[in-house]
Image (tube, rainbow, N blue to C red; front, side):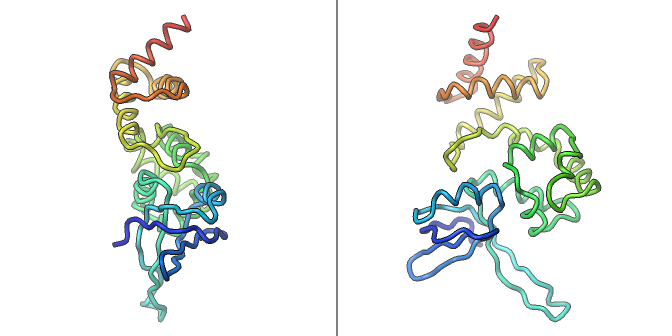
Length: 210
């Protein structure tokens, strides 16, 4: 299983990126939202977190072709695997649908916004409802992803954000209000090593606006 690939980005075309690694060139399938980021990295070394799968239908005389799907962040790959686990959603369909950042799609799922999900390429109303039914309770981690210019996230910060979200909800805040408070604190560009530090910043900011 190939789980990560690092090399010089030679080209980005359509839904594929080509990386040079020593004497080899690798073609990796990429989602649209990552393609936009990768276009600014041509000629640079990049790392992609990958899934390895076989494409084709040998039962009908075809052959199986090995493919790689790659993402700039490990959490994006995790989200993609979840989408692929929904009945009727395969790798190609999920890849085509991911034109918006993971955070945006996760918020739509968490808020049961079937209309927004149905607007994604290849996702109709029935598929949107299946995605919501299966994944809604698993979305807080992804809905709280920090919006960053850099492609790689700090995993520790991601865990702190998710735990803080759960803490705010347990204190009586709604899901939307918890996200709003966290987003406002993160917008200060502070570094929060633990939940206590992030909660302190949230409540300091809230009191400052009173």
